[in-house]
Amino acid sequence: MAFQDTKGQIHWKVHFSSPIEKVYEALTTDKGRKTFWAENTFEKNGYVEFSILNYEKYKSKILAKNGKDLFQIEYFGTEVMFQLLTTKDDNGTDLILTAHTHDDDVKYEMTAGWVSVLLAMKAAVDFGVDLRNHNPVRVWENGFVDN
Image (cartoon, helix red, strand yellow):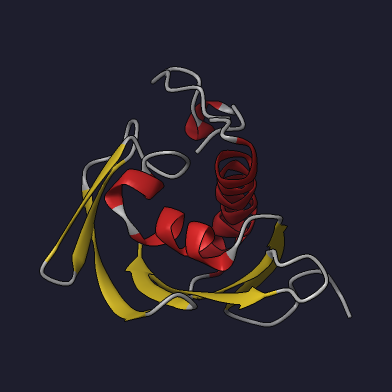
């Protein structure tokens, strides 16, 4: 099997040593998303408005939000599903991300972009560390590794 070879789909997994409730809260609340994903988010009436450095505010529709194990949104023209599973060996959490797009250019950029978001999330949730630059010059479009 080749790397990310399913047409129109991005698929990543990441393991957290943190319990599922903590991972779900980081993913699904404004307070949590601010620690790794966006400078700010504002959730209201089934939408999340993302404020990301050097981007116009972007409003994502929440497609599903289930208890503590599923969050699905429309995000920059893609449909993204986050599934969370408790791991029995360490009471941690496996997060499975699946994103769908029909645009090969979007898939190319977002394949790497989701690695950045997920690793920043792991650092924030498991270790309380914010890996982002928070500098409008040191951003993705200028060749910097950042969210």
